[in-house]
Amino acid sequence: MNGENIQQAESLLPYDVWTEEASREVMIRALEYGAKHGLPGEHHFYVTFRTTHPSVNIPGHLRARYPEEMTIVLQHQFWDLKVDRTAKLFSVGLSFGQVPSTLVVPFAAVTAFWDPCVRIGLRFGGDEAAGRADADAQPEAAAPVETPEADSKPQVVQLDAFRRKPARD
Image 1: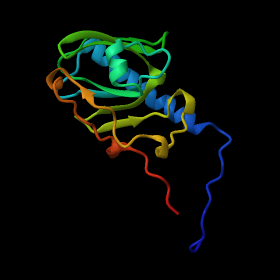
Image 2: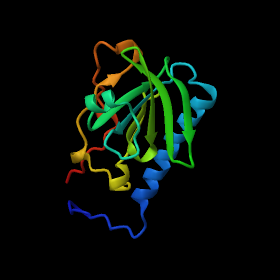
Image 3: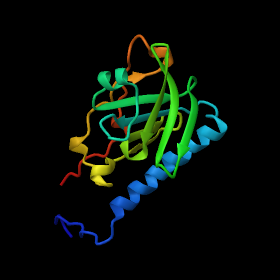
Image 4: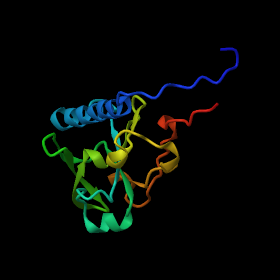
């Protein structure tokens, strides 16, 4: 073992898929808790999702503004947060430029979930990757964040704090 490169054996079990499924379950439970009880204390969620996913349902002006990816913040001013495990999606009401909108987001479209209150961040490879997250394919920052408090000027959320780092030899 002195200085040798040790190669990890290729698993015959789908640990990467199981790990992503478990992480998505954490996100789903957090959303369910928020839907049922509201968000306690300083907890709030940043949810990044692919607007290109075929089952995403957002208003046309948002799709035009965010043609690939969008990050929303669930904090003070959201309503009707609903989680549908059967349909594998969540829906939520948010205002953008003082225009109320309902967003419907399948779990498979979500690429990142973050609760900055406790620094819990989860990244997902998406339905195409099925648990095989490729750090090189991920953008360095999420799309501008739309919040009721920041309607006039979008913010950029840096997701580097919980991004997987490439393995180094």
